Structures are given as C-alpha cells and as structure tokens.
Image (tube, rainbow, N blue to C red; front, side):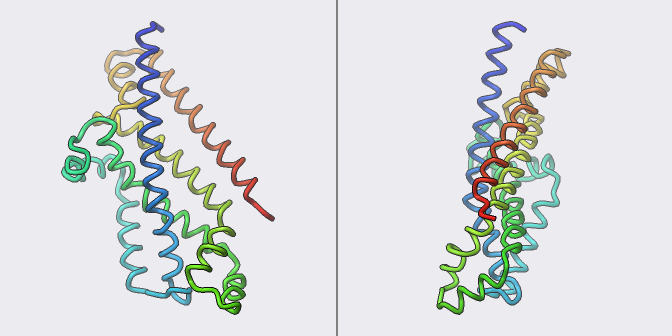
Length: 217
C-alpha cells in the first residue's frame, strides 16, 4: 500500500473517530436524561406522568424503527440547517446523533428498571426528593449497566458512521466505497474492515473493563 493511500486511511480514521466521539457525546448528554424521564414518569414511579411517558416513548420507538440510511436521507433539510451542508463529517453527526439518542434513552431506561425498587422506597422513607433519588440511588446503582449500554451505542455508531459514507459522510465508509469498491482496491477494502473491527474490539474491551470496576456487587 502506497504512502498516499496510508495517509488517506489515517485521515478517514480520524474523521470516523471525530464523528463517533461527537455524536456519542451528544447522544449521552440527551439520551441519559431521556432514559431517566422514561423510567421516572412510568406508572407507579416517583414522577408518574403517563402522557409524557407515552409521547416520549412513541417518539423514541419511531426514531429507532427507522433504518439509518433512510433517516439520513429524510432529515437532509434539518442537517443543512444545523450543519450548513448535507455532506461531510459535520453533516453526518446530525443523523448519527438523532439515531443514537433514543437508543441510549432505551438502554438507560432498561438499566434503571433493574434497580431494586426497595432501594427507592427506602430513600423515600428517609425523605429523599425525586431528584435526590435519581442522582444518589438510580444512576449510581445502574451505572455498570449504563456503561455497557453506552458501549453498545458507541459500537452501533461506528457501524452507522461507515454507512454514512454511502452518501458522502466521510470517514472509513466513504474511503471504502470510493477507493475499495469503485476502484476495485481490495487492499483498501480489507484495511478499512480490519480497522473497523479493531475499533469495535477496543471500545468493547474498554466498556467491559469500566463496567466491572464500577460494579459494587
């Protein structure tokens, strides 16, 4: 492989890491509160609000059920408004984030539901407010599961970022299509696949390690 192609691979890797890191950050900042709201507003929970719970649930389900490639095309006008363009790495962050937010929300919701409700009742008996219960009981107890869920979300984003290359999103997916597929460069195709596999393995190992360290049981 030539030095020019190696430079292109490194540039594409940097673009992929940038897209995944920014979209994962946005998804975490917005998805974790979404998951908390979905749990706390459910029937019989500390902030029961069934209408809000159902509306947010429907929105999350609708977004998650839309194939990513269709979502990317469908929100092109929104992408242009937010990113100023519909192609490139900055533009790809918009659909990546929108796809990941409900995913993270549902993952966090599932993790929080695993927390023993007896702990919540004990905190209520001691006079803890709903926000104190969320901050000091729900989130700390569910943190190992949340970390594993966020790890899965990041891995999904790596795959989505590769798909974003199909419509000019940049990164390893774009390089694989333009050089590996369209120019019949098998070496480029294999290199991008190997890099993506290595990224997934690295993220999964880091997530597993962090989850084990946070697990108090």
